[in-house]
Length: 99
Image 1: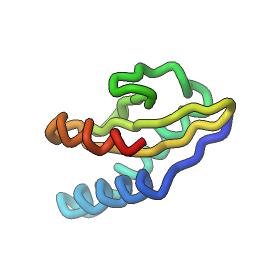
Image 2 (image 1 turned 60 degrees about the vertical axis):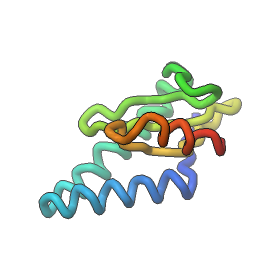
Image 3 (image 1 turned 90 degrees about the horizontal axis):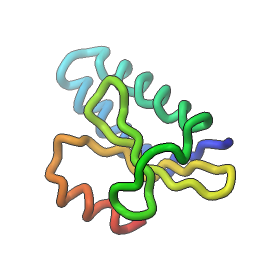
Image 4 (image 1 turned 45 degrees about the horizontal axis):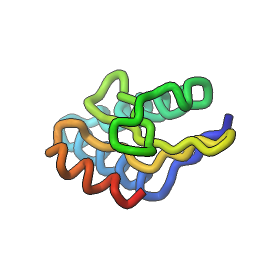
């Protein structure tokens, strides 16, 4: 299976990096390493996660309070958003409506 990361998801990852890097130097890099490992695991486990908001699957990150939203089409996983789970649920639903 192939994993692709959309531009919007890349932006989400960079926003998360910036947030954690402001908290303490080095945590932003740890955040990216952890989230990319979770995204890489979709090569094996893509499609096994629930679809709580319609057609997109949601995988929860292991070390940070983030959710990885992705679509599965044939043998390609496309990560469309990487969102902080601590935000207002209505804003998550609103963001995911565009997919």
